[in-house]
Image (cartoon, rainbow, N blue to C red; front, side, top):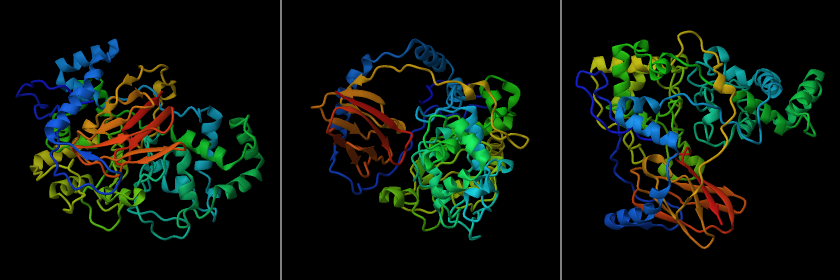
Length: 483
């Protein structure tokens, strides 16, 4: 959520912090998708007011009320809270972790037998000694040819709703098949891996321990589940930044604190690099040259052309070079790219700063802050107690409403209940293009490009629970209970 506004002392090094970030884009024309309405501004606001009247009666939990009151009194604390470490890892109910499953997944991750030639493992490109990256602009696979995109780090993938630079995989369980089957990466298949692993008695025992109730115990499904369970343990360890967020004032230098102010204020970096992992998991065109259409090609949406997934900034000092094409060698190169503005084209993200001009000191401060997100020695996955904690049970009841907002890249409310005869109206009262999608055997829905001030109306074909998300900002999740 947004930080709460408040006053700051002029002599405070955080005085540049901007509690609220409101980009001001130039809306582009609607592209494709199903018919929708574009409301006049006054009617749009009236619709929003009427629709959200019901939301005001949805009370906050007492703990949340207390936290918000405290943040309102201290806007700097509120801003820090947006980057606080979580309290559990979101493991899916269909693939709960066990020590045996995680150990098996790690073994498979490091085994080159997964590739056609027996020379390339997952860990070849996602090297634990290199912060689960490879240190190359573009890596190589079984054919020894350079791949089309830079190898991303795997830190904190447990929180990622979509995987790969273009978001083609919807889960870690689904993700593994892509590199294994890619002819230039591993050039094999999970079915071949089943055959190979079945010949090794030690693997047969390991799968039996990890999946005692599965039949067969060695299958593409169990291979995928084991590797995914291991990958969800790759939680970046706490750094000096986390100690500062937790209240250790001296953990950061004045220069680094000023860099944080630039990151969350003038530089507008936190528009996309948000949360504990410093990513909103969205897809943006940041103005890099090239013909790669990225997310736009993957979902057939021209509004998302040249858009690539926002990477985590955790441990970034260990994962150079940067960007989806590996084209920027240093953090200073990255900062200077954003100062230049990149390639001007209609799809360039409005979340980027316009005409950003930094002084030499500001640039140095920003880079200094970014380096506080990395360990000072080669990083290892976190062993904090919460990494193994269970997800808290319980959930607030759904809101009874037929109108949902998308302001600030959030469906609000994000859990609703509607009657079967009621259409749902989704307002784009944000400043960005959105794309409402539902993938369900009962209902396959794609709104196309939903521009600011446009609404889409959804009529559900059956009772039950439906999950919607934004195809451009996939952390936006909406659960609809149709009764």
